[in-house]
Image (cartoon, rainbow, N blue to C red; front, top):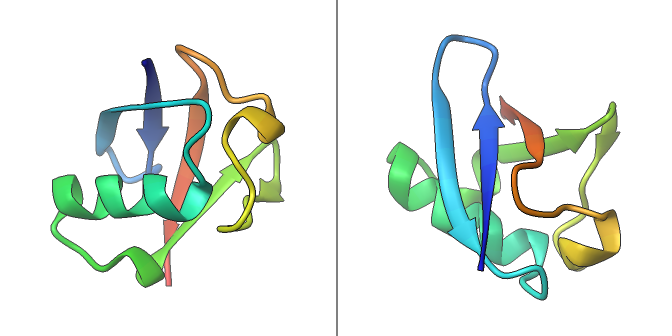
Length: 73
């Protein structure tokens, strides 16, 4: 189990627990529950690269304590 910090640059920071084997799309569903929005309205970036829903967090080298940027569509 890892904990990822997500920052939307508008002052809202969310900590979410997940597994490295989880897909980005599944992680967006976890975030959507915490943020009260729809998963398809969330865009996640790491280092300026947009994360694709069908790739696992581990493949993007997202580990415990990683920071991600959150944008809304």
